[in-house]
Image (tube, rainbow, N blue to C red; front, side, top):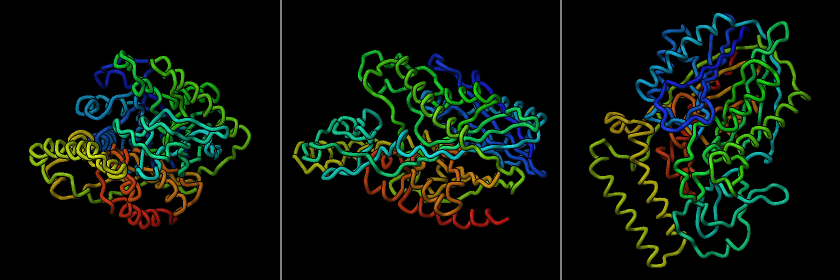
Length: 482
C-alpha cells in the first residue's frame, strides 16, 4: 500500500462575499495498492450541487487517471462557507485545476505506509439528536439554545428554538424538561499513516455532528449580525490543525451522517463572530484531545495490504409527489401554493385549532416553501428529471485495512449509520455524509411522519430510503465478497 496526503487553499476559486476568518481547504488522501488507485477529497464547503460535484469527479479522473468510481467529493457541511451557486461553473473549473495539480503531485510522492487506528466511543458526551416528538404537538427540530442537566443530557422547554415560526402553544408538556434523547452516532475514529521510517504522512479523523458553529451568531438577535459573517473552517478545521501539530503531516476530517445530530455547543452570549470562533476552538480542543488521548492509549496497527477495493453505485430513487412535474409548473404554481398554505395556517391559529393541527400546517407551509429552493438551487433539476419522477443518487464504497467506508448522499440521518453498521461489519463500517454532491435532507419515513425541519427540506418520498437500503443490501453484499 502506498499513501500520500495533500492540502490546497480554495481561495481564488469562488468570489468571496465575506471576509476570511480562516482559510477554507481541500484536503486529500491518495491510496494505491496492486494497481488500484483511489482518492478521497474533503472540502470545507457546504452544499455543492450534485452535477457540479460529479463534474469534479469525471474531469479529475480524465486528468489524473484515477477512475471516477474511485474518487470521492466529500463536503464537511461547513456553514461558514460558500454554498450551491457560488461553487457552480467557473469556480468549479478553478477548483478542478487546483485539485488535479495537487493530486498528480501526490501520486508522484506516494510512499509505502503503515497505519494505526483508534476506534473511540464518544457516547452522548459530545453530540445529541436534535429531533424529538413533543406530546400534543408533533415533531420538532432544535438547532441551538439547548440546556444540559447535571449528566450532560440535552433538554429544552423553550418553544422559541423549536422552529415553530413564532407559534407558542400552551401545552402542559412544556412545564417539564423535554429531553432530546433519540439515537446519535457515538463513534469517532483516528487513522495515522506513517512511512516505513515511522514519519507521519497524514491522519484521518471521523465523527458525526454539524460543523455549524462558526455562524452561531445568526441564531441570536442583535442588529449588526449580518455584518458578522466570516469564512471559517469550524471545529473540524481547528481539530485537524491540532492533529497536524501533534502528529505531523496533513490531517483530514470526514463527517458522518448528521442531519439530525448537533454538537453540544453553546448559545448564550454568542452574539459576534469572535464569540462563534471561540466556541469552534473550544469544541475542537474538546473533541481533539479526547480522540488523541484514546489514540495514544489504544491505537492498533492494521494490515494495509488486506483487501483494498473501491466502487461507486448509482441508485435511481423516487421523488416526492408534491414536487412539480416541470419548471414551468413550479414558476406558475409555487407562489400561489405558498400563499394558500400560509392562509390555512393563519386561519387555524386565529380559530384556536388544536396545537397538533397547527403544527402540521406549519410543516405544510414550510415544506411547500422549500420546494423552490430544492428544485432550482440545491438539486438544479431539469424538466426531464422532474417528469421522470426519479433521480439518481450515488453511494461510494471503499474497503481498506479491514474497514468499510461508505459515502452516502445528502444530509443523511443517524438511522443510516445505525443501519449500515448493523447490516455489514459493525464498528468497522464507517459511514461518511454528503459524498458526491448535496442532496438536501434524506428524510426517513419516521421523519416524514414526525414533521420538523428534516421533513421540510427533503425531496424524498416515503419509499426513497427503504429503496436505497434494499439496493445497498445487494450492492454492498457483493462488494464485501473477496
